[in-house]
Length: 183
View: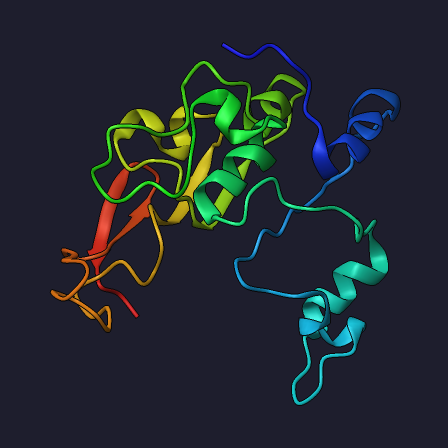
């Protein structure tokens, strides 16, 4: 079990957790394949992102950091634990049914926040293992609504059968599957 501290961009949040009378609300948005210029407040052309722009204007933005790995699952493991993914036995992006995932003994951002009295939620792609012990509710989050792995890991993947064979893609609410191949 890693008993280290959370690092990465989360480090900038730690002072808020210990030194204010009223805890601040915060949102971490982790997007695959999004770049700095993909939001209108950073110069996106051809579309606007008004809600993201509003959050950026009203909050604190961390704009100079690197992900610990270029692969989604490992990158998420690093963000949520503050550790290099390889150090905690997490490499790459686990395929569905994979026998590894985020270790239940790791201190995740969700667990840390719960210890500080926060309510926690994660929406969207998890990609840290799809067995129950690896899922968000078992790793410090009160709510979860999303996919256990990438949205392209489903029967309609363009190279289905040639490279990969994926079953129906589950959509979760909490620990329960509420649909497959949803829009």
